[in-house]
Image (tube, rainbow over all chains, first blue to last red; front, side):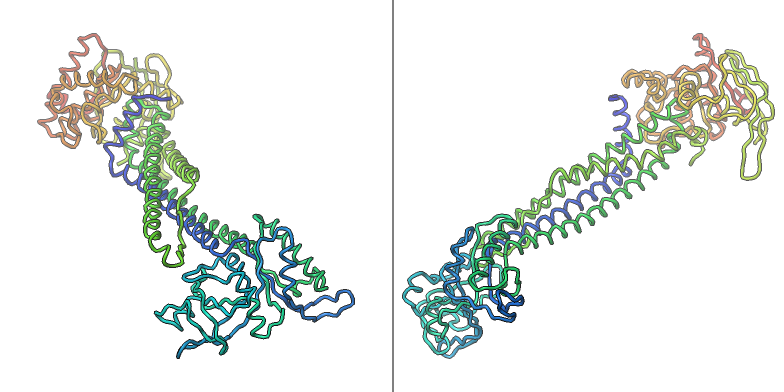
Length: 418
Length: 211
């Protein structure tokens, strides 16, 4: 099989036919190169969005109240469910629940400082909300347990509120009027993964007292100690059961309470990315097919161009199999080397892009939210290698058919070919 | 050596069939020097191609060295061509991307002679043709006469039993033709005197007269 003389003959042919070699090689290298870029970009996009998701705690859950739609234990439908402070304590006791925070939500509260004022949403909460929503404190601190216990009139304002009311001034330590009641600003925060930070955060106990909230809650926010969809579903189920016992509604009643399971969302988004990956694969396979067609075309032309040479070789005593071998080994040789070059260039380019993005992202990561849509754009190496092999095989098949035909025609016919 | 019996050959072109060889009987012994003459289109080339196993015939029998040449596989035909026949074509048929030495050495490649050895032998034959300093030139850098001399060296290198030359000087001017023919005759004499049996066929009358 391995015959040095044969390879010398092939190398001599390749060396003397540079244009032909280049064209065959180029179409293969280009196909592989484009496939690498496509798959790499897809992976980069997927990785980037996955990392953005991490900005909120992935295992967060929000629960809010609604109206019952199923009659239960003799009570008719249409009943309003209302959370109270004890519901937070109840949920906290459910197995698998990490930290919890009650929320009393006030929209359109008027914030004013000096001449500036604006309407913003106020979230009243426990200190644990910081962990659930992964809030970033830009200056000062977040609500703490002492604020809750002492009903302190303090507020943590979102960055946008600070910009609107305080401009360049330091906000922490100043007093803002919230619906004309003065609150001390103790911190400024921003919400990662969002372009707006227009919420203000207030101790739950203070807000309930000051704004006539009694012990009512609008919603609960919590984290779960769950890693899989199944685990998070189980925790969700337990919370629903506990709350249904407390508030006497059918556990199957989806509208009595609403639950937003972040992990579920996360997994769903990952499914969307699987769809995007499939899409990228379809394009990638299209690129590969274009490459295969290109190689096949060139092989057809190569064999046509070599018909006379094949005739001469046959007149001098070349057997059909040696002629086919010559054409095929040459094409396999070229496609292999070119495929490898395309592979190296494609992966190399993606590595360079990755390097540049890591370099440019690192200084700005601290200052802003560090939003990257593109992360680690690399390709599974085995995929790259099998794509190259596919092109090589396709080139060989595309060369084999015309080579076999050329090798089997009478030498005199081949010699007449001009 | 060569025995043709009632050979027929026709070319089919569309609906028309062109009957070229109509029952050729031919007997050529070892060492014979035969030239075939005839008007254009009379079937000289067709006969040569059949003798050289480059083409097949429709009817009759062709015996070469006692064995019947008929319906053989391409592989067997290629092997026989390599062992028995040396071709000199009107249009030289050198491989354009190989230099003179590589072109001459090519039949030995198909005989399985190692590269170094066959290049050495090729240089010997080129020397006999007076082309030593042209060994590394490509065909397109050589004149017609030089090219044909390379082709002759290629036909001789495998020391075939038969040399078939189809209008070897057809593409050359007169002066060059004489040069080539003188050279050929000289070589033939030398090779025959070396005890090898050659057959030389030509179809160009004028050359023969002058030679």
